[in-house]
Image (cartoon, rainbow, N blue to C red; front, side, top):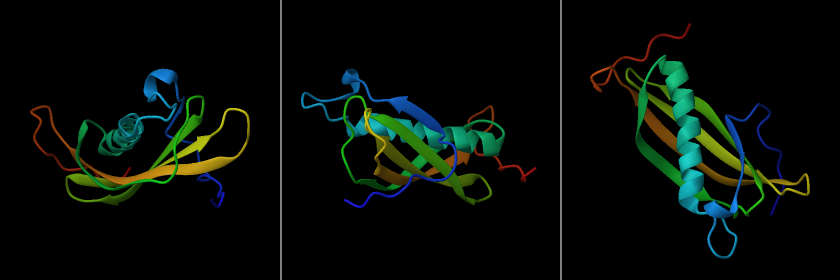
Length: 129
């Protein structure tokens, strides 16, 4: 496996993988990791939409390497495209083992969100400030 550096920006979310997040072999559940990625994308979407936004799709979820109990997981979300009511966000997760400095990309996916109003109906994403 080729070791690459993680993105050169602050992660959207950073957590430590705990035993409750893993199977009997100490590998983290894919659903736990996907939930973190959805949360990171949601934070990015809500910030850009200046309000509530909801997930409508996940495309291209790829698991590249396992995450183990004790690994530090950093999730990076970046706005890729803005439509009238929707936003596409590219998300990568990287892991670092707790006793070393080696990092590895463990997952990546593209999430699509729609900005919604107080009645949960789609609304326009406001122009960039």
